[in-house]
Length: 279
Image (tube, rainbow, N blue to C red):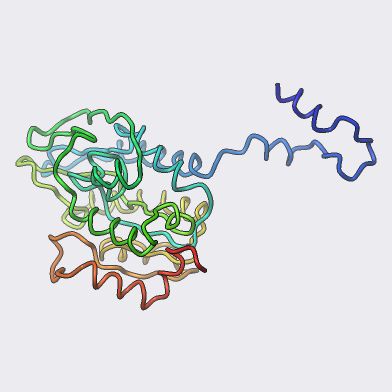
């Protein structure tokens, strides 16, 4: 089929015709090049393999990896919103229990994913399920407050259209794992201890370095201090503008009026025009 298509495209063109394509290694590579989102996802899959080899400490009862068990929705998000390099990349910490844990999408509370992003897909279950942390996918009725705050602010600043926002902006999470202790308490990467914390950080940072080279952002916005401190070790981030935006979680200290403060931050650094695709 491919040969036939190429033959049709070149029919009637002489060897010396400047319009005639020259078939070689570069042309063949272009025809079969993976889309950007798939290159990004392949790096995530390799990161998952590395993370699976790291011994989990006794203080962590189980870990969830929604990039794996919610891959259908996760890939739908990548296909929709990562079709080309972006000017700004927002990087959050890790999946929230009622957000990405349920949907596979960063800060992805169900209403945001199903109504604002208009995405759908199957969501499986992690291999080890904590009884206090069920995964019900798009049937989850509890809002992820961080996701509501973040995505609704982005939506408003982009004039009510996430397709406008996504022209120059992309949202990702530094670590794909959610961590729970024996009581089902959500353990953030900040709260991890000892060598395990360092190993998780280093593996995720190594993968992110490769992803940044694909997305090519000129501005990297770390959402929260954990990611900001981790990205200080990034070679890529030393070559571009790196900013720290306060995390939208209600668990964060002094985090009242987050939407107002976050908008002021984005305006102060001249990022809103990119979110509106006006730059």
